[in-house]
Image 1 (cartoon, one colour):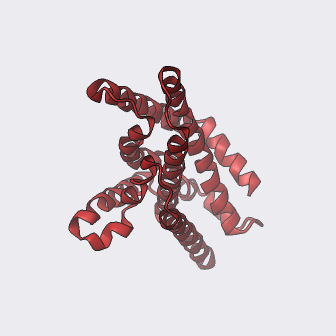
Image 2: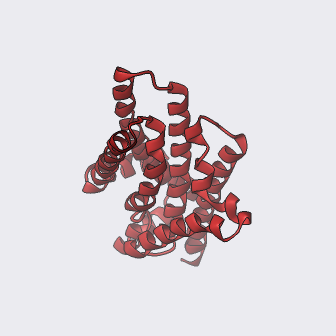
Image 3: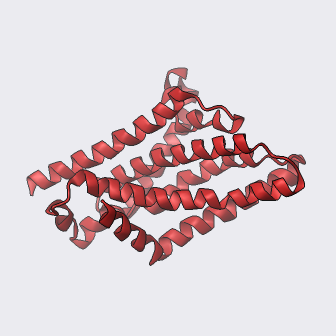
Length: 226
């Protein structure tokens, strides 16, 4: 698994993908952060993550669209399928590499908290709670994006499918309250309030585990066919 993580991290750092992802998110987060200060006159570090969660809907596919679709397109998928490593370790290696990039990105937002601390006394507990919830939200996003990448060799199709499902999740609660549990954005809403609900943490983790396992199943079936 460690070898896969290193390989994936190298692909992110030796290509524009990782830098585009980190740079775009931090730029947009900074704009949202300072806009909230000048528009409302109130500076809350955690509130910027509400809009930032929407941004991740469109940025996460930048990380995930190439995970497996590129392997199929370049003909290197066969090497993964016949590797002595288990398919689970390959999938987890790719997932964890993407999450390391996400973690670095989230930690980069902490500079805004330090700016607020210089001028006031922001609540570190609420800030950390918000960042935890945002990390879990991103983990769920990455897991689905990885699954979408595993079922097609076209990166654009994988990206559009991922964004489409995420946007659908926005509107599901508006259709019926029965769909609230399927909305990742709704599950994140309480974290910026400084509340860590165990059931929401479990839902995020369960969502991520589900699509990690589905990705393994897709690859296993493709391996058995070949």
